[in-house]
Length: 399
Image 1 (cartoon, helix red, strand yellow):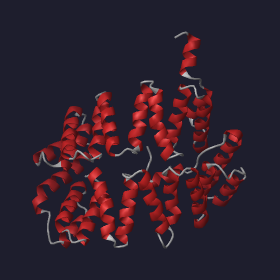
Image 2: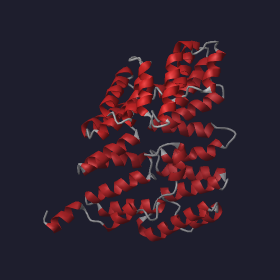
Image 3: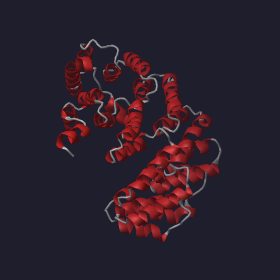
Image 4: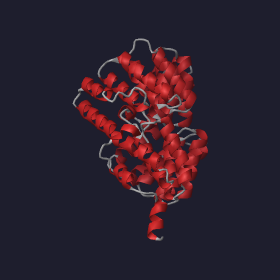
């Protein structure tokens, strides 16, 4: 699933009204081609020629094109219209952040980010963004809870640990800062910012020197695809109580094809940090290779207990249910994805196929046509438009 701000930019080309499907698909396709040539104003006129001021998809497309054209205020106006159309969606509020960030005053951006967190309190990107906005305003006490929340869910995350470390330092919490700086050095052993931070508090990484050196060597070896060598280096400095060590060994063991060992390390990491999302997502990799769908499902479900709006987990649980032909259960997960990100083509495509299997043909056609606005020649969407529900096919073939 694509849920970062970078990807949202690519998601702002979407859909279609059934009453003018062909016309809309053609207009969106043409506008995409114009955008590729940086012809933003003509692309805007192409969309406006549809005379459709009401649909969510038209407004969010116009919002994005106005942003690309440098028309910040108009872009924000169109994003607001999209927000009004889908107030419970995260996607248009993400988009709003692009033009709002260009304003001298970030009050409107902060307002939308906080509204996103009302919908999805554990949203990694937005918590990080708000923390950073307050950090650079030197409002460290306001930045602190956002970074702390993300580190609690993703304890080995580079950006949030580094930001949290500096926030702690500026708040005079040197012991906490030192801990976070040292985590950063495990992730990036040569990180200058973390080293500068430790110097600033007149501490060094001496106590952690052996571990940091082992991590550094493991990165060097894994970059050469010598995963077993990277594992052996870490084992020489192994500390069973180290979350980062077990997480790293879980990943390296997976890459080395040692899936049982990988699962064991991820299990230890989960026991050390039971409220972290990170190791649960990691544990999916070896479980998938081992073909243990029960464990895969359990890991994703455990993610949702901590982060109910995690669209990556919802999407993949939907795929598991779809593969089992439990289409109604799959639909619930895909609906969650599309409700939060109405232009997400992965979610739209699976909504199309799931609706088709549930014999909701008119709905499935709508979803497939929305996908075609983003990917005009998407083979799966085109196939879906020609397909019939599985139940009808079985009836005709006698199976």
